[in-house]
Amino acid sequence: MIFHTFGNKDNKAVMLIHGMLTPWQIWNRATEHFASEYYVVVPELDAHTEGEISTFNSFEEEAQRIGDYIRNELDGKVFLLAGLSMGGRIAATVASGRDIKIDNLVIDGAPLLKVNGLMKTIMKKNYISIIGKSRARDPKVRKSFTKDFLPGEFWDDYLKIADNMEDISITNIIDGVFTDFDFIKYPEDMRILFMHGTKGNESVARKGALKMKDHNPHMEIRCFDGFAHAELACFKPDKWIEEVEGFVT
Image (cartoon, rainbow, N blue to C red):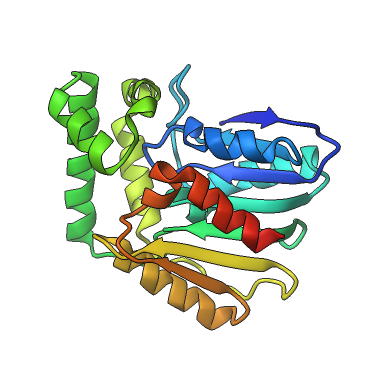
């Protein structure tokens, strides 16, 4: 894991966690915006490191590393902790640390519910196939990705991830992301926003959001009708920034 930092470290901290197969640069626009007022930290998660091969072992390990960074480098305090998709699940896990102070937790499209073994097997095969085709520079993958998953400006960054991605990391991510999440009651003074769309598999995020709200009635849910998974953050970053900034101020 690598931590990229922007802005003045004396300012309040903002941490942005990317999703699966999404490069850390997906936060470029948000980083540019928030760095003028905050100290922005963007982790480059394991199995997504562009300059070297690294292995994603578990969500617990990723959350532990981020938690340790917050404790050691940020005095145990973060003004805004935001996570996209898989990164949202990691953010929600980090926020459960009782020795860490999170003022605002923003979760975007996080999968928090268990799926059956057959579905996980299918997803593993699909993702391993996608990564293999990406390494081979299959133009069909690029066309599909840049239409529905990742803006074209980040394609080269994604390919660096694909070139280093190991099958074991994909297996570990799928096994971890689609297990039951440990829903807890967060501190009342931690403001929580759960964002999700309505298209495709966003029903998973919606159900997870409702279950999290059962444990945290003070949490706010914002549903963006007609948006697919991670579409707002990836394809409409200025709108995402507007929503989040309006929530934390």
